[in-house]
Image 1 (cartoon, helix red, strand yellow):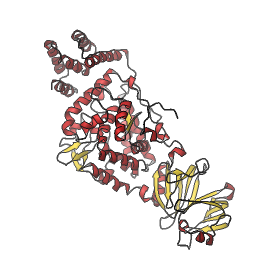
Image 2: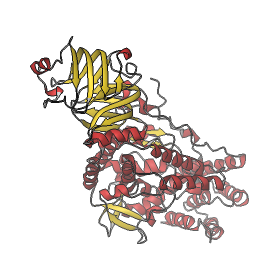
Image 3: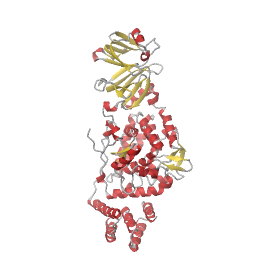
Image 4: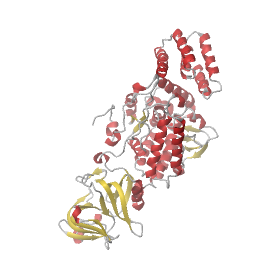
Length: 582
C-alpha cells in the first residue's frame, strides 16, 4: 500500500482503514505570517502557562519535539515521540469521532494540518496545528495521562453512535471549515452555527458516543487538574487558546469536581465554556472512564446492545458468550417476553470472527447478503450447546451428517442436515453449518433451504455489542473519509507581498543579521499599505530592541501603542510588547 507520509514502528501498526485519513503535512504551504502566528501564540502561552498549566506541559513541549520558533514538522515530532511510544499524523480537519478515538487507541495523535488565521489568533473552533501539536502532544509525556488517552481511544472507538451523531459531526466540521475561510460570508457562518444549535437540541436520547464525546471535551480538551480552588490546565483546548486559558481561571467560570455526571453535560464549541471540570489527578480520569465503560454495550451486551446497533444504522459487532463475533449492519432482533434476544439479523456484507480475527471462509463476501442466528438454550435442555460434551452433542442429535431439529427456548426452530462445526481453543462449538436447512419462528421463515448453506452462530447470550468491525483489516475500510475538504485559502497579490515582508523579517531574526535601513522601509510599507497588520510590526519591534537605534525603536513602539488603542486587538499588541520587553 503506497503512503504519502513517513512511517515508523508506531504508525506501522495502524489498521489500513485509518491510514486513508493521513495526509502529507503541507509544510511548504505555511506562509511566513502563519509562522509568526505560531510564534506569537506559543510565546504568549509559554509566558502564561508556565505557572498555570500542569507541571508536565513545559518539559513536555521539548519531549514532543515542539519549538516555540516554528511550526513543527511531523517527521521531527515522530522522531522524538516514538521514544515515549507515540506518533503523530497530519489529517484534514475534523475526522469522524470513532476514527479519531481509534487513532488514540493506537498511540497516535491526530493533528489537523491547517493553522488558524491571524483573525482567529486567540481561538478557533476548527482543529489546527496549534491546538493539536501544542495542546495535545506535550501532556502525553506524562505516562499516566498517556495511558488514559490511549485507553480512552480504545473504549471510545467502540461507543455506539446514533444516526444523528454523524449529522452533528458533519455540521461541526462544516462550520469549522467555513469559519476559517476569510471569503465566507457572515450569514453563511450564522446559518451553520444555527444548524448546529438545531441539531444539538433535537438529538433525542443521548447515544454512547454522545457521552464519550462529552467526557472527551471536559477532560482531553477542556480539563483542569488539582484542587477546585487552584486548578492547573491540562486540556488541549485551553492550552492552545490564549484567550480561554486566561478566561478559564476567572471566577466567572464555575469549577466542578469531575465525575461520570460530566458525560451528560453538553457543550457549545462556538462559545466560552460556563463551567469546567476538575480532576484530582490523572488516575481519577481512568477511574471515571472505566465507570462509564461499565454502562456501555461493549460490556453489557444484551438486547439493548443489539437495539443500539440497529438504531445507529452503521457497522457494528455483536459477540456471543462463546466468543464468536458477528460484524455487519444489524437490522432486526426478535426477543421474548423477558426482553431476552432470541434471534438477530444483519443485512448486507457480514463477517464472522473469533477474538478479533476473521474466521477463514466467513468473510463479508461469503456472507454478502447478511447473516442471522438464534441465541439461547435449546428448549427443555438446561445445558447450552457450547457446554455440551461430544457425548451430549450426539445424544441431542447435533452430529455431523445427521438431520436434526433444534428448537430454542425462544421458539426459533432450526431444521436441517449438519455439515460441520467450528470450535474455539477451549473446545466449545462456536459455529454449526447446515444444508437443506429451514429456520423459522412461529409463522415466519427466517432462512429457506434454497438460500444455500446456513451457518448458525452458537452462544447462549450476547455479552458485547460495539461500534465497528471485529477484524477491520480483513473486512476493509470502515470509515468514509469526509467529502467536504478544508478550504485552501487563495491569497491576493497584495497579501502575498505582505507575506514576503514577513519572511524578510523572519530571515533577519533567524540569521541574527539585522538591516535597520531595510526594516525602516518595511515598516513604512506596513503603515501605508497594511495599517491593520499588527503582528509584523511587533516582530519588527522585537528586532529593533536588539539594536542601537533607540529613536526608531521608540517610534515603532509608539505606533504600536497608538494605532491599535481602543480596538479589539489592543490587548494582543500590549501583551506582545510586554513579552518583548521582558
